[in-house]
Image 1 (cartoon, helix red, strand yellow):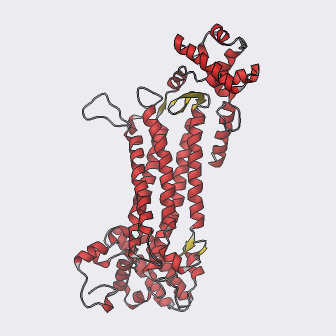
Image 2 (cartoon, helix red, strand yellow):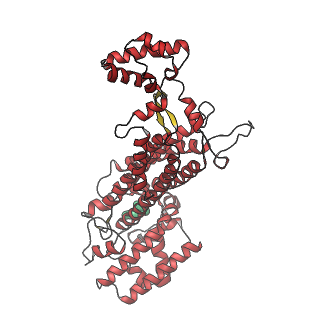
Length: 459
Ligand code: ARG
């Protein structure tokens, strides 16, 4: 009968219940948030005349003592204490006596956990933003060197049009910048303090919620207590935002895996970030991008898990909600290590520009340019131009020669309106540089895009 809530019970909880009910073995990760929250709450209660200055001093000293016990590994985390809130409060009371018993005035574990967890998530939003920016910087460094490196642009994984490698990387920079915006917007939206909502309906004590919000660094206080103690949108948002970010990381990873194959040979990952095979001595495997692709799955799982936990819950707090934490902790850790290792893999990889350029020599990448030439120079409607170009491509296939290298006489045979100046249009570099429309691949446009990201990153 050593439970804080044991007053109305006559038999002790079974050890099986203790094991099933407890969150202390994982929510202890929130000990800093919990102790800071308690200190802010106690300071506010003192300001309001609910606690004395002497009691406040005892509480603050006691909590600091608990904190150092936790950090030195001395603190005993007990399943029977259920969660970190009760574990810490119990230890505090053991250390300081009666003043410790007053700390929970005008507070419930419901607003306490909502506060701790929200602060953890808000902090992680910003830390992930910082890590994303570091990754973007490394991508910019690589892109800077390859604004003229031809790369076969693809659709359906088939050669489509010539692009350059920096342009390709700018696509990922665009995705990561949106990921940052989502995390920042979520941070802004959810930056409200739950503390003082108590169990569900507020409290009759004369508390000052603005004060605790200010002490804990929240922008303001939440509007409705019933909503606040049961709301886990902020956790769902970080899970969705990390999922989307991981989806982007996974797409880039897929390309890194393909590009490091013999078939592509566009990049070589450094030895530091590659692995070998236990049987095939020649192998150098891209485990890093493969695992990044794989880990995306577990993050999606956490998002689906929490959405499902929340879907049928009546207002307000329900114990189901305790299932909110592990998936978020795991996803945040996954995101953090993923961002770091991807950054290092990119920083240390070798870009094989020559192979990228040679890969452009096949697949008639400048076919669209021939059609565009017929439209622009010969005033032929695009549909007809498309057909004529198709015949030129067929001729190229027959001769086993890329359109960009085809002898002019064959083109003239296909349509006599084609002039010799067409050969310039069909050159691969010209084709890439011809796409000067806003956001296009031409080196001039790519440089603008890179400039935009550099400015954004204060590079
Ligand atoms: N360990 C709980 C959680 O993580 C804390 C809130 C418990 N509140 C309660 N009334 N049982 O959700």
